[in-house]
Amino acid sequence: MGAWQEIVDFTFTANETSRTFSGLSITKDDFVKVVFNFKEGANSTTNVALYPNTAAGVSGFNTATNYHGQQIRGSGTSVAAERENINYISVAELLGNDYSLSYVKLSENGKFNIFTNYYRLLDSGVQNRFRYVTSSNLTFNDPITSLTFTASVTNGLGTGSRIQIYKLAAEKVADITVGSNTTQVDISSLSIDKDSEYLLVANWVATGGDCFLTPNDFSTLTSYYSQRIMGDGSSAIAARINQPRFLEGGNVTPNEGISYVHIKLSNIGAFTAQSYTIRDGGLSSLRLQNYFLSSTAENITSITKLNIFAGVDQILAGSRFTLYKLYE
Amino acid sequence: MIRCDWFIRFVGDTSAANTICDLQVNNITTNYHKQQLRGQSTTLSAARSTNSEFVYARSNIRSQGFVDIKVSNNDRFVAQSQYVNYLGGESSGIEQFNINIVNTGTVSSITSLKIVSSRTNGIAVGSKIALYKVTEAA
Image 1: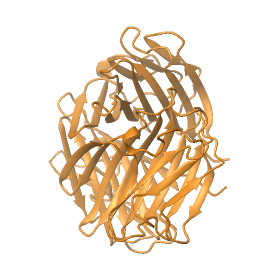
Image 2: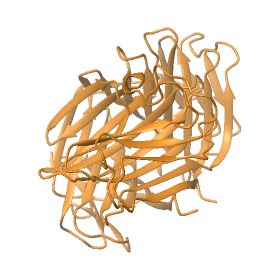
Image 3: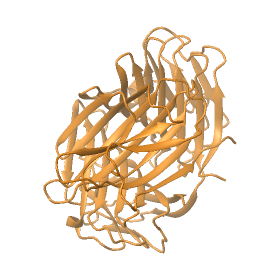
Image 4: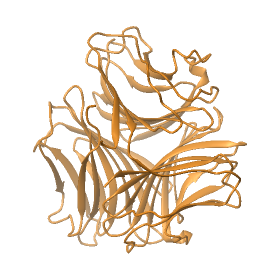
């Protein structure tokens, strides 16, 4: 079995406005990938929203204002950011063809989260967008039983559009739920070498502070650099620090952050990680954050332990960290 | 879907000259469109070009990242590259890139991938590239 198990593969043979895939069972244990090749069916700007549990009847499941989205987009030399009351995963116009790669996660607090990286193809070239969405005002029962793709324009989902949905089926190496507030979580007895890639899904419950990721108890903060891109409302921000920061806590109480982190020991022994985070603070403070970090050291031969640490007792009870071995 | 996991150490002189690498599918050299976001310290910038540049670096640095590669349903080559450059030193530190690439010509399947450095011998000994087939039909 590969790292990803296909659960849906559907190609539209006629233009449609909405398409539901039912009979699914997406639990809080799952991590789901959605590949959406969107061919616009109507010659009008069309947004496509992704809703969970159409059949289960969660009140307001398809009400846009129950979802909050944060976006960063690059178009030519311009950078822009927006925070919106919508859960679109793709936007096309003028019979366009767009492509999006999304990850879907039901977090521990029942929020439905979507991380999307997609492009729009314009006459002037390609435009790329990160769009992260969370169901701030809705909680969903475990499991999610259906996913619905809905176009904002009648028959907007065009013939030839294709939706592929996968569940992560990689080996689960660790799954830790924090029982009481703590400062550090260690994942031990690992055997991460330069050939393999690991995925950490982090559901950090926090009220503030920063969270760090290091290998092998090598926790000298200044031995790492971290660079981030962040969308915070209309602000598109970049920042660099001389620390292995990979998550940022919130300024609301309590804050829920959901993240996925690709961990890789490079061919010369540098520890690297790419972290993608939805930090849910509601419409006033929802943030999209991508942290990329690297060690300054180049002599790490293997990783036997991962250290996740924050300020004193800043990793709150209910936080969950799940580590998968993706590829080797 | 294919995932390309790579580490590249670039070589070159210590002047301001830069090295980029293009990702070419099936020996195709035209019809590429690229859009990137780049975070470097407090500067967030964007750039668009008509090439398939998936990694950019100055001389003598190391670069580590991933590229998700797919042939889309309308026969287009799509690549999403996300990587970190370690530049070294307190002043320069680290930078990150998020790049989307599409080839607007017809690519119905991938039979070859080529990584081409803009500088002669710009890809240093010890660089490593691994390809994984990460999704397939049920």
